[in-house]
Image (tube, rainbow, N blue to C red; front, top):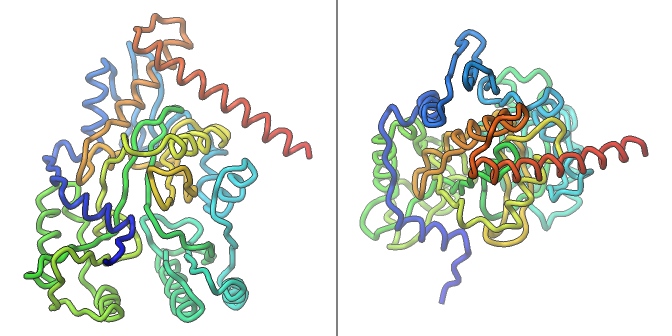
Length: 387
């Protein structure tokens, strides 16, 4: 009997979930924030030129968003998180589980190759320092395909006007790509991002199955521009696996079309807020707590089992797109932007001696516990700096 790996099992389970549908209004971040503000009796005033969303309670400003970055996020936090290599080194010092990476400049290709040759049992990932959206990332790198993948990542960086192209090289972890929203120190929600894939039905061709999936996504405003690309890269991947677009997959046969789980490349977002293990939730919260001047962020992790105890922090995003949690392709919707506005309001009330409701008092206890956790990490950072 053929053994099915955990990712394949999860993909088959998720196939049974209904696809969510959202109208155009509910798919716009601005409207999501405005609706949350209305529920909480808050006012929103926007400065469109500066891309600032100001948040008011009874004519008093309680916070703002600069783009998607929250007012409680400091410049120091932004500078740490914007550089993936700097962030990893920092989190390692804070004793969080990360992947051991090396950073190589454009002219250090030979050194990067030597690095991966030192352990040929592993496969690796190439990542640009600062690009987003999956641009320039190459997965499943070995000594055989290293040169081609390196050159491709550098080309992408140059096309994106990166002044000093370079790559982080890190071990490739097979498993699940998770995004966790931590909102003012509280666990808000978690999304599982599955890579673009199709499941055979014994009748349709690969091309027809892809078209069917893209057709479903086109009907949803949030996903209509996030389609599975049918291009030479996909055709080459299929050829490597012995397929063409005209092949028919056996019923139940899962074919993963990309190694990158990015939604813009046809990846699928599945809500797992109630399924994520306490250990991984805690890791996400502690990672945010350890970064000076940060209380809200989107934590990207890789794990072999999202119900297990172990995960590796890949990124912590100060400009996190919490909208994805409001609009998962499948599963329950959660409301991190509502949680954000509510927690900013609770902080404002507590700091200004305003009466809190019973629910707000309970939430403030969690916020206060997170603030104490941040103090502990600040003390640890101070001690490390002294050393």
